[in-house]
Length: 189
Image (tube, rainbow, N blue to C red; front, side, top):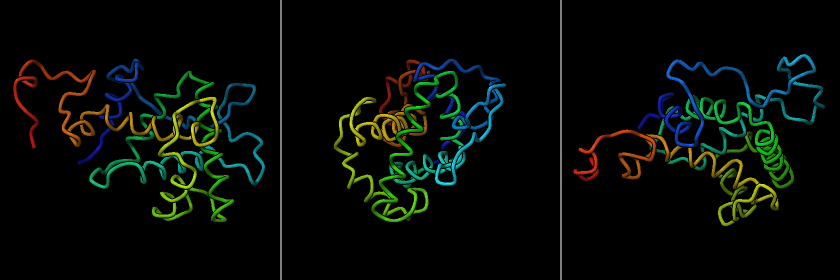
């Protein structure tokens, strides 16, 4: 099943983000703005991830938590995150911090950033952190923040989309119109 930009826009709508049909989402939500308001990579130290590294880390998490039956993940995640973080500076900072924490744990245990690990090792990092059993909490300990800002956000995006909903037998997720016929027939598949 292929995730599309349309799926990302539907997930954004389900999350309460108003996106027009002609919306063009560009840029990198993890880029810092200088004093003029222009996005830049900031004055990051060599040890600090670049905005693109942060996006790559997010995509690496999606590769682990999304079912292997879906494709088109990169465009879907980029579109969703661009829309989700637009104008939400505090949430963006929380997500950046959670991604940095994930990289810190990966470097401590495996001497590489999360995005540089193979899929099985990435999964083990999430498991070893306890992300799968953590209660999502934006102010909580590291596993709870990674769960809240990264894992739950990615899973919400997937299952709020029409394609992701169909994958788990929800043909008409909340916010996705389907008409009364969709309620009269069972799941297709």
